Length: 541
Image 1: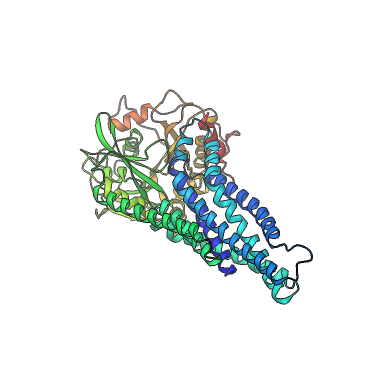
Image 2 (image 1 turned 30 degrees about the vertical axis):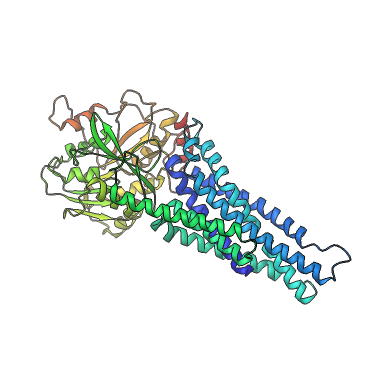
């Protein structure tokens, strides 16, 4: 019984930890900052719980001197110890229920406080994960001490204590391993955040029942609350599935294997739009309701510039599908391509994102000209580049990257010198690579851009920078387009040459600041050293 209790407790802890990141992501992103706060708080709770659990077990199992031989006193102490273990597990179950309830309110309140993401993520983690973390931390040392007491009572002497301690800790660790794989491979892919937390509460309630049914009331209450919550959550999800936005304009939440997405209604330049957000503060993709193929965000129109440099481009790679707004435009009759005869490969990490884009944003997934690969962009670049014959040209005329969707979650591994070398290998000699980055151009807030630019400058002969929203305010965080050319070439002059209006705007926004090569303040990003969190910290100033 104690072995099963320790195993289930270890499983619950890791599922709680992994789900915590999903709980905070809509408000603070899913960056290293958020993971650091969650792991640190839960580890602190477990540590304090271990100390308290051991002390509690000693106190409850201690038989007064002179009464150790009395069987009734020893049995009574054991019964109290069993009941206390059951109570601890029931308390941990209520802690998970509290996390599920407060998780729908507290992070949003902290996010609106105006403090930095570091402070808000830490405060949210402390409030949400300290109670269940502390109570779960008490279980293993308490159960271990209880097991030692049971074996000592049977043999009349303490034997094999080291073996018991090792076995119980091993079981707790194996449970944590099971929880890690269960959470990462199964639960987060098929269940909502609230449903998983309610399931954690049920798991801990089951462990409490194993430890002892009496008192029955708290275990029954925890189980009923969790089951009612699961039923209500399932009903709500089913209702949203069928009604969508019919009732009101509240965003629809979509849980995917990699993100917590929100689809909501809005307006852009007086027109109704659907918005897709995966990080707090801004939308990552949008679609006009009355014209699904049109581009909503200004930065997406800057992808017209590569076509001005290579009008005959046919083979295109898009790293990052998102809401599929750019692929949808490229495949429409509005496309910048000289003809509709193009081949478009889209690499999108999250199949749930693709399904959401199909359902709400009319992603043209059935178009024979587009091939979608659900894979990490860097893994795709590495694999595809390695498979090319040594002397063969790159297979793509244009490579677009739209992965830096926010500064909360910076995919540094696509902006390193090694990634740039792989992208260069995939690009034709007269091709063009264009990447969207959320950053400033100059000053402390522009260090991320300069670090990515330095990485690409090692593999590309020409790297150009095009700020989108504020071309004359280089210290402002905004969408910045980085364009990399394998061979140096003269850019078109929109004053004398005919180019598409969107391409002309991009050219007029070109940053002409001198960029140091290399930049001592922001060395090129490298797979071994990419301090992107340090760079983006300045964005909150």
